[in-house]
Amino acid sequence: MTAFVINNSLPEPLSTVVLEQLKTFNEPLLNKNLIDAEILRGLAIDGRCLQVGLVMPYPGQSQYRDLVMALTNHLAVIEGIDEVECEIGLNVAAVNSGNAKAHPKIRNVIAVGSGKGGVGKSTTAVNFALALAAEGARVGMLDADIYGPSIPTMLGCIDFKPTSQDGKTMEPAYVHNMAVMSMGFLATDDNASAWRGPMAAGAMEQLMNETNWPELDYLVIDMPPGTGDIQLTLSQKFPVSGAVIVTTPQEIATLDARKGITMFNKVNVPVLGIVENMSYHTCENCGSKEHPFGQGGGLATANRYNVPLLGELPLNVTVREHLDNGTPTVVAEPESAISNEYQTIARNVAASLILLSQPDDLSIEITNE
Image 1 (cartoon, rainbow, N blue to C red):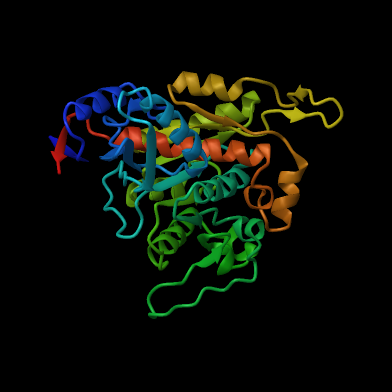
Image 2 (image 1 turned 120 degrees about the vertical axis):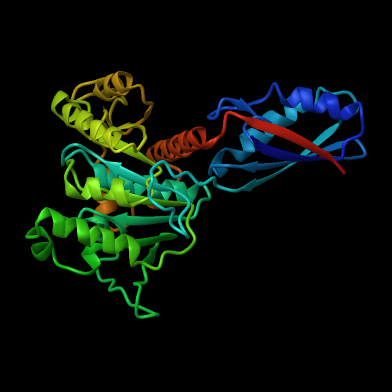
């Protein structure tokens, strides 16, 4: 049984009242109260000011203000409390869903895949990774699309050449507050495209193991399309925490997305959910939504495999323009509606990982200081 400790210096009977009130306040994505979700870490009182210490297990700093306001209103009804002060920290939980040994510097590995090309997988992976960073996480990105590495172009670092400080490992590029490694830094597209499957899988393994990654909460891996050697190597040799599948609404794309889900299921990598890209287009003149590639394919696939639909992303020319300029939308327009959607997806994925990792036999220990 796992013990979870809460430091509590409140006097009785106030302590009992506060704890009972907190049991009725749920964290929205985890759908658990702050105690059961292992978020509440400390309680104290200063006069009539209640001091609450929280440590979030997933990044979501854009939502902290709303969380504090809601919690303040929830606790302010308690007699004897006139004010609530809340301090929020972040300690991302590590999840290893497979049998591979955990990486000493990487807490979570998230694979972003698709069953076919042309669905905007790399675009989604880049903005998703940057959204995790924008929410407060330490993030790295590995471009595992050996046959056609596009991440250097999308991040504006095509001229980067890795160096080694110890003669054994390569230093990653640091771009937009992320550590990045790609075959595009090491070989031309012509050289990479001629490789056979086992060679490409070996190259991806080298990139993963021979990069001097910093301490990371998440390593996002942009997978090549399909379900071949590289996907199998990743799932069998690396501690993959979970996978995200990118699709578009039309039937041909969702059919291939199902193949990707099936492949990850067979190698015991949890599918955290589906992102439907190019879901709709918003008319610039009237604001109405159009669905050029059909509607509902991502949701239908999610329902079929009992995984969440993590988000629906629009078909928007500015997303492409931002990537062509090496400044993805989450960086170029951080307050835009599209960036907000990417951040929603990032929070949903991170919360899904936490739900995988929390034990059912948790016991709560409250220490009175």
